[in-house]
Image (tube, rainbow, N blue to C red):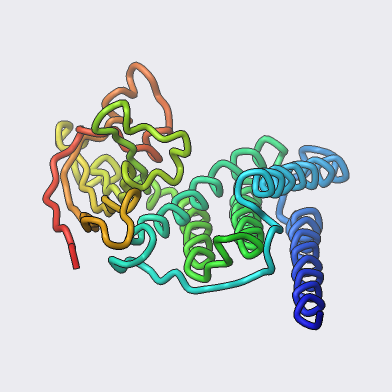
Amino acid sequence: MTGLAYTGSKRIIWSFLSALYVLVFLSCTAGNCLAGLQRELDESEQTTKTIQLNAVSSAIVLTWGVLQWDYFQQSPKAESEEWFGRNTDDGGADKLGHMYITYALTHLWDHLYRNLGSSPEGAARMGALSSLGVTGLMELGDSFSNYGFSYEDMLMNLAGSALGYLMLNNDELARKIDFRVEYSLSNKNDFESDVVTDYQHLKYLFALKADGFESINNRYLKYLELHLGYYSRGYNDWSEGALDERERTIYAGIGINVGKLIAPLWKNRIFEYVQIPHTYVSIENTFND
């Protein structure tokens, strides 16, 4: 009986902390953090829209977590998942996945806040906060599920948010460097519905673009870029006692700047975030231990 009471108390405490987190997150979003925003919209209207936007996002995350990720089915727990070791769940690819998602969400939220009338600097700041808030809420939800709260995941969320903010506030750096994800299938039967966590087919990379350097004047060289990336394979179907084919790979390559190549026909920023397969050659180093 004492154990049950203790477990119930922990649930109440963590539920209170989760609710407090959401309230602080929304208050920051609607309050002092709006100080740097332009007043193109009426201030009260802008505040209302900001609260609604973040509240809906939080509600979606929690609802999906309850339906798909077993949120609030267990007592809260936190544990270390480690980083890029062979015996981690996904060889560290999931950690770069957290960083990339938070980075991309920071830029998405930045776009949304600009549409609400925010200044570029205010939108960047709010984009980083909202992105970190949503992914942090997911980690809190995970603490009540089989997954558990991961310190490493939260640190990578923070890194992605910070990098996204840095890129938004440094045009020169953003012209030179992209943080991208690549998704490629060996055959159509390999496809999994949860693409975001299908680490068997994902790669994460940084691209250094020649087009971002004014000192490079050759028009052909402008289409080239250097890649530094990481991926893991063989983790999805591995189990204790089975043939161990788990691999972690770091690679460097040279590729074509697809965004610049097709800009005359279709100018789109998606290629700053997505890497098209088979548009580069690379040298790889695979770790099996």
